[in-house]
Length: 332
Ligand SMILES: Cc1cc2nc3c(=O)[nH]c(=O)nc-3n(C[C@H](O)[C@H](O)[C@H](O)COP(=O)(O)OP(=O)(O)OC[C@H]3O[C@@H](n4cnc5c(N)ncnc54)[C@H](O)[C@@H]3O)c2cc1C
Image (cartoon, rainbow, N blue to C red; front, side, top):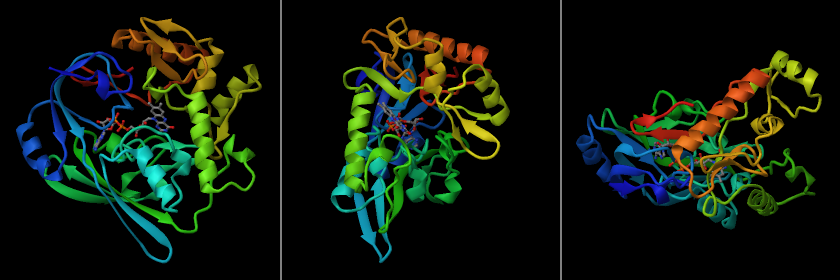
């Protein structure tokens, strides 16, 4: 058995039956031929996956590396192997004068997992810069390139979480970044910066995230546990009759996004814990492993929060984090 404690940022003491490390794309065909009919879970840095209990299958760990780049008059093009670290890529592009990723600094994880939930922060989503994604198609044992448009990027969503879930191993992400990039500073606190450079944005994002979010190396967590719910204007106005200060972002003429952290905070969950799993004192959207937590505690707390939010606001919270049980994904 293999320990998963160091392989997911929540740090639960779970085990897996076996592990295969993919360091070269040539390994993919024989690996998935061997795994045919067996249970497997694709894993990057485990910052969006929580192993609630022992996993009764094989972990396929992505360690593919390599970066290629070229340019034309208007764009920089990067082809990045999926096992590269996302934050290292942000730093290295910035140092080369390639801009666009700075708002997404300090998001943990691999480059290959970034398109899966279309990682986003401070008004930028990675899908904007993705020209195409190459993946190994497990059923046909072949490599396929899908265009950014066909990836169906949405808020924390893409085709890889839906039709291609467990069918595609992302091997390479191809980015296209405009040379004339305009910094994105719509969201607080970036909107307080006067005429910032991309480096100023990067530094501010790193500073704010370091202050606001618990460091998974010190306190196990998987970032935002729930997605921010999108509700109809009618639902929103209903809540507003009871809480006139409810924060919100208008999505379009019919829908509004409400911060899940605000909903959870209204119900007094900050600092509440269950069997070693706690709702963080400063950032209630983040559930943390106090060191001795386990999957049972996490499920109990996460389900209680979900039920309370549903009963008080008629909003169905959806988890952003992948919860993995003995036989694969577990629903809240
Ligand atoms: C402290 C903290 C802060 C965070 N902040 C943000 C944030 O601001 N914005 C945001 O969007 N996210 C955030 N996250 C979530 C997380 O960092 C991202 O979802 C990240 O992209 C996950 O990468 P990973 O390699 O760790 O994925 P993993 O957890 O290893 O995998 C995630 C999912 O992708 C699948 N997968 C992984 N690699 C591949 C592959 N090569 N091919 C196919 N499927 C694959 C896995 O099976 C799993 O279902 C945060 C997490 C933490 C811990």
